[in-house]
Image (tube, rainbow, N blue to C red):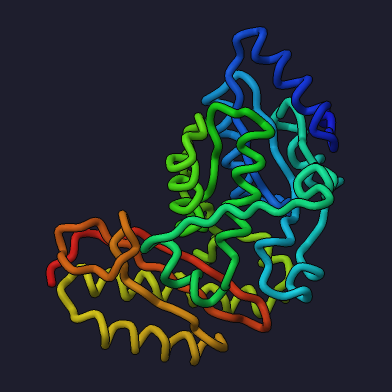
Length: 286
């Protein structure tokens, strides 16, 4: 059965107040729609963790860096509702734009420090302000106990976790493993914008990451590994490789010691579509 779709904040708050009176716990899965198996894995995890589960769908204009990218982002509300039906979610919150950004809205949430100064930060100015602002709004509007995000957007996960902690929002942010295509490509709503041929070529991103991570773990120096990976991606048909970085998994700062957990993060363009990915890197030996 398809879950009810709510578009107005008063209706949402009336429903969550009802759940609270019954002593039930609430989970939220924030999305921008165009749901795929990765999103659905978050819904399944939320169902296991809480009494009530809602999915939010809002294509947030403040986190896009170009009007064209915003216009091209897939919007599939009816298909999304059908995909959620087998999971028995309790409601789908698809707020009208004025429920998030009413007339005269003038507040911005900005997370500083090392987690926003690198990678996505320089390449997408203002992006994380848009993410932090809309997620703060959704956390407060839904009054959820737990929120579920995929680790595919690892830097975003760190930003929303820090934002909730710094603002004392009483919610637990839970990161779930990246779900991948059989080729290894991380599932993403943007994959819908790729042709079948481009999808096949895009699998080279994760392959290059796994190879570089394995060699780094075996003690090979990082600069030549990065250079080789960028060359392999160019040969596979990728355009600009914006970053291919080995970072401290806890701070996203440059890795200064092998004793710290590491993460390899990358962003690259395939046929006009920007793809990102990250993987955990086993113990380093440099």
